[in-house]
Length: 470
Ligand code: BGC
Picture 1 (tube, helix red, strand yellow):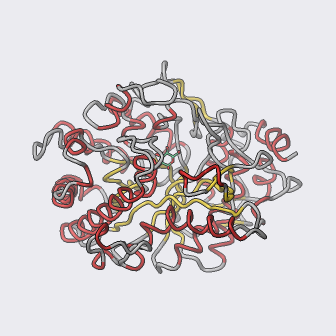
Picture 2 (cartoon, rainbow, N blue to C red; picture 1 turned 180 degrees about the horizontal axis):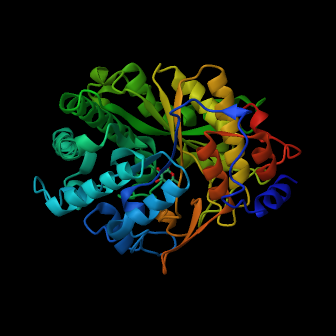
């Protein structure tokens, strides 16, 4: 079956000398960004002033672990920057930790600001284009205690932070991501209870949070452009493919559409049309001015889930969202599967985002896979999808893999390993996985040869990317 063959293929390790591939076959446009994405709390280590450190201290990580030193970036991000350069990457997305920069309201930590300046300079010195995210799930404890994005002052406070960051780093950064995955932040924090503050089933609160983040995003977008007219500003959207379990059974189709709307469309609709697909004005407030407030869209795309109508799932709006056993999957989370690894998800997501008429960056894509069983197969098939989309004229400017080095996976702790490079978090030792060598070869060649694809994911292996979904 698929997985055995893939693991045989990826078992061959590709040394740097082998990595030089003949040109031809899939050539990507000049200037295409081959990057990786990270997030401050997952890599920096010793973040103690944000709401996630409280969540960890209160034992809310499913494995009971703490992020600790994480990937030790606060002391030595440069070790991973060197790796990225050696791999031939030309872009890196990271985030700034708001609680380091503004540990108390309107008090700015100049040492922390300096450290971020060093990091950004370090990237430039290595020929790597930085992309900076302002909010990747974590924010200061004081902001959380003041009701976070439900506070009436959230927009003002977020704009103040944004302006400071752009004044400090604007000479070193052109690409800005305001928010990472508002839909995941709202769903996991207010509906599923897996992220702080751990609320469950609060769908209307989640919708209020999304509307508030959309307004914060819009204010940040305008503030960044005021301070840096040539800035490129977007946000990163998590797009999940939901597939009705029984296509001929109307309740499955209805419930799938509802789940898709709640998860994929609620925030996207605000930016796309200036209104929520759930027109509850008393909840959402004014949103019209948010319409079109981005220069690009960042797409984070990982998985497909199947959805079945189920009376037993009343608290989840009667939606049983699951992963069938016989599909490609990475490692399981502590309590449930992570999702089906589905390369065609890229195409379906890009088709939806193209409707916004803006350039697209794939800002996250990957799989938890400690043994590198299917990551090479995923990368090869995703690159094929990108190549097809580019050939059709889609304006895709870059692909950022999640992630470079295994890092602290939020509520899953150290359990899920997404890195192209394996990390021993105790010794901080790094070991490149075969998929790291593969990705490096693709980035260096700005494309992929048939030979390389064949070596890592033989064509004889069933290509699930030709399936249609949703
Ligand atoms: C998040 C990352 C996370 C990754 C893997 C994305 O939704 O932005 O922070 O580590 O998924 O789960």
